[in-house]
Image (cartoon, rainbow, N blue to C red; front, side):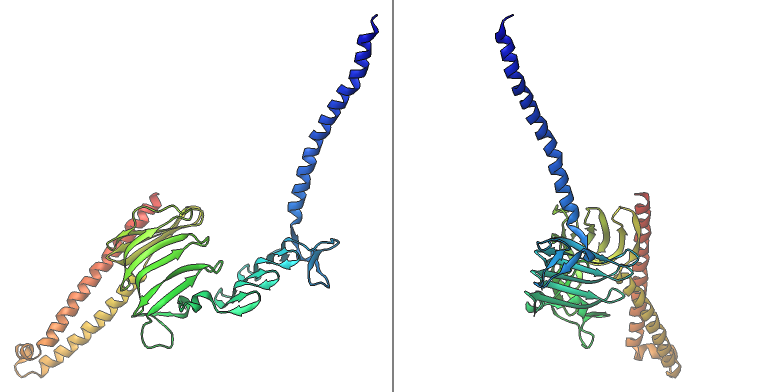
Length: 363
């Protein structure tokens, strides 16, 4: 037998086995690395009781040598979340939110490096905003909109002749704004003239993307440009004071449609975020018409009583009264015409609402 092939086999075999061993060790390392990463992500969201604040003023996870970075939360005895926020290098950083026992948001504040930084909002037991403040590096500063001379719409009240300050005897004129309840970001901004919307009004979604650009004149909506939450521009809209104004949920599903006729909102219908129809309602414009109906009916009855009294006291009777008191008869006639017009408009709006409800139920 030739000894050379046997020698080659003996020398080559360990090399082949060594190569196979290295390959197997690489394959085994991969899942170990993935598991380590997964554990890291889970550790980055812990309960407050797992943290401790040390003498250096920083928060550490118990037993750790490095300051904690990641999310943390506190829960009630019933398991409901009470508070949630983030730490960065042991200090509060970013958005922090608190809830009451009924899971209603009670506060929303922002931190940077352990100091209040940004808008802080606090709500009362009925979700009424109690305070809104602005901070820079822990120092209280003026709200940016206030610094620009804008008035928060929440400070104004609606009266029959428009929005005004509660203590004022006349409608407000000037720049105004409002903010989203959920995160304190700007919701809308525009101008009031004698308490009514006038000029261009801008609205934004909670994610900061522009929602709409609406043009008003003396409270009437003349035109609209709207966008979906993903930034896609919507088709159609309001043209020359007529059309349907649409708004969407953050997930892109239709949320609200408002029927606009001659610049006035008539009927509003809505859907939940899953696309289920919630129902429709009459607008404030309709409610004002309803109130105007009652007011006009009272004025008509009062004027009729006045005229009847004039006719009784006129020597020439009705004919004589009509000659001398033409303005009273004319006023009564105008009031009766007005009442007919109002009732016709109310009837038309009711029909629109009924039709809209039927369409939505079919969809």
